[in-house]
Length: 162
Image (cartoon, rainbow, N blue to C red; front, side, top):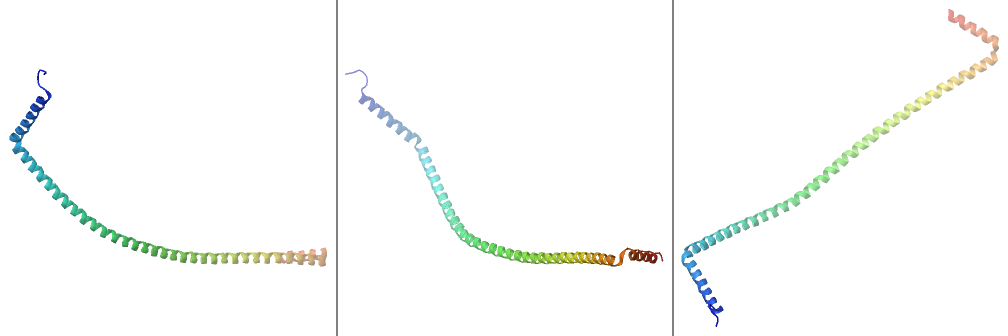
């Protein structure tokens, strides 16, 4: 046999030391261990109660918000309807304004056309009169001759001098 401890003896002393250590801890620290376990138990119980209350609050808020969301959906639909109505009203007002504006524009164009027509007619009349006077002057000049023209000229000058 070998000198010293064998594995079995070593295991036996290690086990005895371990159990003595546990026994010492239980004897010396039992009160503190029990108090710590009780305190931790109370903390867990309080946390559980708190979590339960929080869960109930969350459930209540969830229900409340779901109800509000239902109301929001109907509110959104109402807002859509109102927006469509406003757009239709605005479109109607714009159509009226455009129609009025186009009527005024058409009347303005008609006035401009009439004014231009009157200008053209007046200009045309002046040109026709000028041409008629020129033609009449030529005809008179051809028929009267130079001598008669001089006599009429002299007569007009004497008339002006008076």
